[in-house]
Length: 396
Image (cartoon, rainbow, N blue to C red; front, side, top):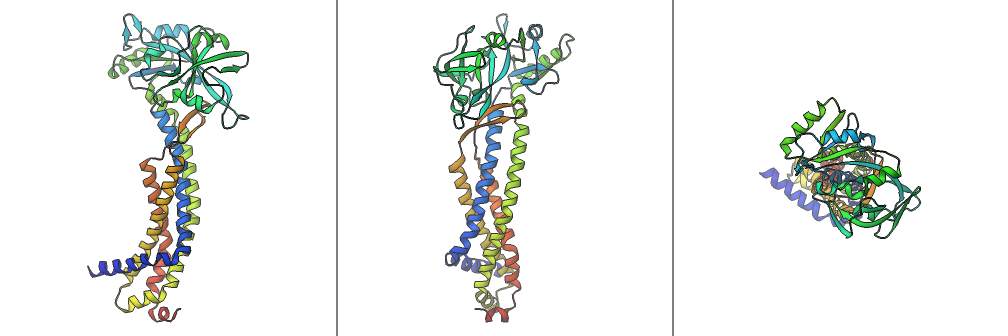
């Protein structure tokens, strides 16, 4: 109990004198805050991208692609394949009609609004009349739905905010194709909002695809009917397909880029953290040097070395806490919700999403700040605890 009282007393003295050393303490605080801002903001990119992908799709829907395809872009289904797939058990039906739609995706170049000279790969999805009843999250928020059999298109809300020529009334020009934008749609913030939707038959004709598709989306009778649906298709000798729940497919699409961004984020934070730790070390060495006589006096009065060591470490961690709090707040205010788009390397197309500064990221940033404070105060604390009392009393 006596040791705790001594430690708290020394710590209180250290913290009260921080304003007197504001310039040196500010170096450590600013350094740590800068590291936390960069660390949290970079990781918020991965969190936002993963959230956009993982919120897409539904476990009540299944996506059928060619066996071995890792994305819709590398898949291919013939019209005959589609007819056979629609006969599978487990698909929900309205009357005799299965709730299943064959779709195809192509990539076109559109300039970004923020950088018109840098075209980006924007996905265009060819859908059929069956595609809309499949997606309960779909809704038109501006304009109207396109008419099937025409060159009309609708654009996702996120795509409209990132790329040019996607406002209602605009015309998209891609090669010899001209498509009129007649509406804007939402899809609960999912990846579909980065796409442009058009009649599948129109898209087949424009790109000479014949009667071929890339995937088939089916609504299941229930989540439990997925196994029966998958087993029937994979055991059918007429087909060579793979089946995944729609939400699992989109979640897997985020793994490569998310892993890359997180690796970069931790790497940058580690490099910057080294500089911040040196700043904290210099700050705490300065604090120990300027208060050497005070520390020696306390030890001469009976305060043990452990109390001095812990108090110096705690002061350094307080600086880390202040820097981490400032850095986390700056990252949240500056980046949370910021809309952008990036390339999904698994589909080679753009995905629009918003940065997400989550509570977990803020807690991780604060932990990292405390760790930098702890490391930065360790050697100065050891020096303060080991400083001979007679020598320290003679220091100015």
